Amino acid sequence: MRVAMIGSGYVGLVSGACFADFGHVVTCVDNDPERIAGLLRSEIPIFEPGLADIVESNVKAGRLHFTTDIKAAVRGAQAVFIAVGTPPRDEDGRADLTYVYAAAREIADALDGFTVVVTKSTVPVGAGDEIEWILREARPDAQFAVASNPEFLREGAAIFDFKRPDRIVIGLDDAHGPAREVMEELYRPLDLNQQPIVFTSRRTSELIKYAANAYLATKITFINEMADLCEKLGADVQDVARGIGLDHRIGAKFLRAGPGYGGSCFPKDTMALIRMAQDAGAPTRIVESVAAANEARKRRMAEKVLDACDGSVNGKTIAVLGLAFKPNTDDMRDAASLTIIPILQSLGARVRAYDPESMAQARPLLTQTQFYDDPYACLSGADALVILTEWDAFRALDLERVKSLLAAPVVVDMRNIYRPSDMRRQGFRYVSVGRN
Image (tube, one colour):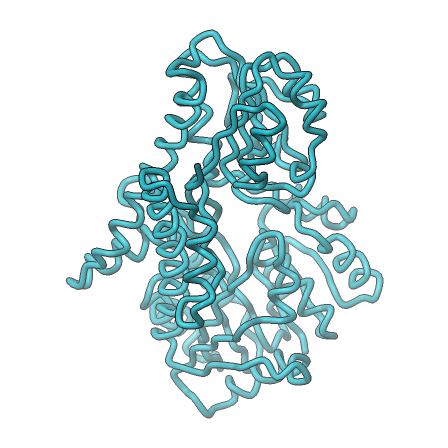
């Protein structure tokens, strides 16, 4: 099949490359000429394990193309995906659909034959209706259908998630028409894996995406609050998480205590859901509490560093390992480091930092921070080591070397990647999350 992917950011590039790997002919479009020029030179603008290889192989096979010409990409395509950004509006946190609707207007000019226009971007309920209206007003003669096909890609595991999804959600208001046939054919290569496809209405599909992310954010926030309780009562949050996660009604995923959720989805999607629910007159009190608790969580983690340093970081050097919001990505959006580091600096700390992938993105966001190209150089002479992201490279540090390099043997492990008993036996003053 011929596919146009409007937007070559994280979702668009991963989705386009994976569809091409299925055997479809895909053209990824972006209005940023520099991004397209880089992609044509096989320069991947994001860090995602395995993505560069898939892009390169499918470009060589002639199945994956890049362009700034949206009309050329749409013309003749059976499916056109809108995969542009929906950032939160500064004034109220609602999803900004400017880029989505602009893409719809450009798509309308190029519609050629029956086309399924698919929203891959995360959009509030009803956005598909507006897209259909835009297309219909611009091209009353065109034959098309508008579908919703939300993405459920975890950064760092996006290719696996696309090719081995838990489910594929497709929202269509014409449940048995030609649009369904197009969508089934697009995902037919996954039939062998018997991946479930959930066909539902377009509005329901749009809400499924928000509901999923809000629920996962709630699980993270819940276990973080249990971690605080564990610290007060002398319990171990990792055992609590295992004890409840083995219950199949709950499940073990997203029950890891830490400094709070971040990234490109959970913060903006929970806020967008909150605003959407308020507008509908059905406020989501649980989600409102989750968003507030998560922001407070990041500030509380800065206090944890302060406590580990005997109540003051003024004049002290703090070494931070890990800046991205999670490992296996260079994404700095709403990362805990963007809250914790500035708080420490405002209290007089000199902060050094190292991350295997995200430092280029972090430098303009953390301008008062000194960056290092090696974790051991980063912590040499520091008064405390803070682990913020659980990269594999940090899971087996040479602890004897770490202790010899630190000016004071203080380690604040916000991802619980070491055992408290082992660290204390090594002579560290070790602070973790939800454990004593």
